[in-house]
Length: 198
Image 1 (spheres, rainbow, N blue to C red):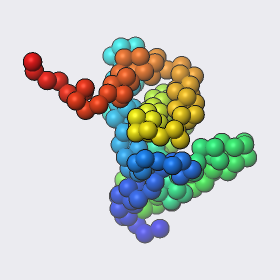
Image 2: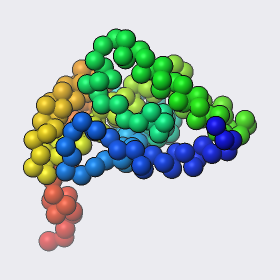
Image 3: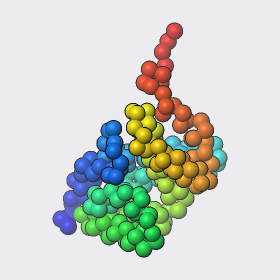
Image 4: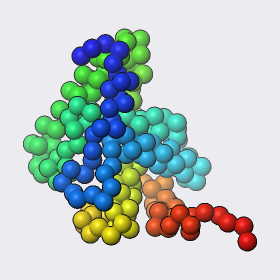
């Protein structure tokens, strides 16, 4: 890979479309998903730190979330039913993701590589942060399902139930807090969200 092209490659997230097997009322790019996941990871980590007194850094969570699916710039978005169809496929895809991450890291000047390597390898090196990012990733997918339902699509109804269950099954108190206290606002219209003075 060409040196110093890392950030130009990151910019290409906007060309990768998610949910390839689903009929979408509005396409979602990888760039949108990573941004939303970063916002949610930061929020979950603030909840974890300030409500549940967890030793978690919101800025680290947000940074890791921004790059959590960067490998998909090279691999594309593998549909979840395919990615997790069996242990051999899951293992092979994980290996492909790691190879794509290594390829992306070669596009950095050597003095920058360690910082970005740590963001890419959070699953191994930052397991607490990884839990928050994984929960944020699932919440982002769930919010996409809500948006599709609000737009009249029935395509995401099963994914909506499965994804909410997956978040709940994680047993992360900050994610449960978000679901119970903040998630319902995603069901509101813009007029309902806006604060108006009487």
